[in-house]
Image (cartoon, rainbow, N blue to C red; front, side, top):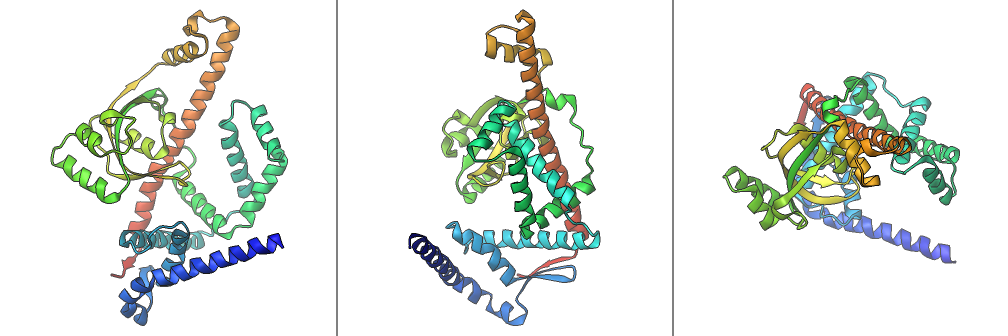
Length: 348
């Protein structure tokens, strides 16, 4: 009986979500009624269309999260995402790009490797899996099954495979990037209208620091000054701009999210104050001071081995983050070229 009760609640919740979806869209539907009578088309992508039904289906996910779907900017962004998805679908068919079993296994193995890197050592990771009732083998099998059973995920992975194939797998990380640190400031606000107003004030010559004190919701940084940070100490969205900006320059605004996109913190703009290069010796001394309160040269051979291991882990983590940032930059460039090569018409 208990299971049936919860099942009934889940059904009622889904019905409620659908009803909210329908009522929330009444204004939007009637505003576009003439378009619907004609062809229900929101955009044309080469010889295919993005329909109002496609857009509404995508917006349903936002309703479940309690987000106002009547926001015109959100609707426009969904249409752009649908267009990009349609372009990539067409390219996958054209180049016969699919995800095979070997791809799925490699993707699952890469996920395990990324997770393992966040633990102090492999034993800690094994113990964590054991606490979840898993072994490495059973977790790998579970990940493979999840990918195989998700049509949408396989499509997204096929798109990633196509994009990566166009970019190439030989992305090199210069030593200079590994030894560079960044001093930056940030302004973070909740609403997009606020950040646009702040950008306008910056263009008119108002000082970044004064605007940060006045508007930024992150009060941990007076005048917005974060200070010196390594690439691997920041969110991916911030690192993208740290690598792209020149000292003294200010970024455009961007949504600040967790690296996996699940958490939204607000809209941000950053200013790169300066960058500097630090030597391997400096990094070794910093690690040694933190671990043993001595410089590297003063350590015993055994303790030097410990610090060398920490240094190797530090470099691998930074390489992984820099690779992700570089890949993101190249992907954006490629997607722009793909967009420019397609025929896209958005209905107003």
